[in-house]
Length: 86
Image (tube, rainbow, N blue to C red):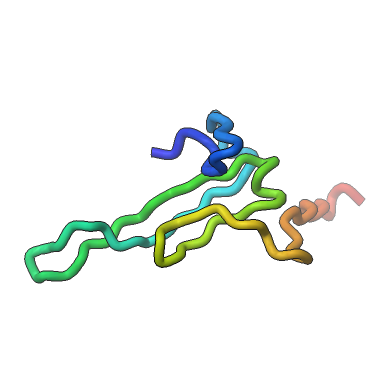
């Protein structure tokens, strides 16, 4: 269960999903099923609003980690204005 920001330097508690960003990864678990294949599971991570402006999550051979976002990536998209608002 996700209950705090995935950034180890932050760890802000998760109260609402209205800010921040959820990351979902399909990762191999350490368990082997009856067919001899490694089972897989979905792992969920959350970065708070402040951390998600400069950080992202990625999967690497060592596991899921927090990384700096690429420059030029626009995170915030303005809400579309309603046609009725004109």
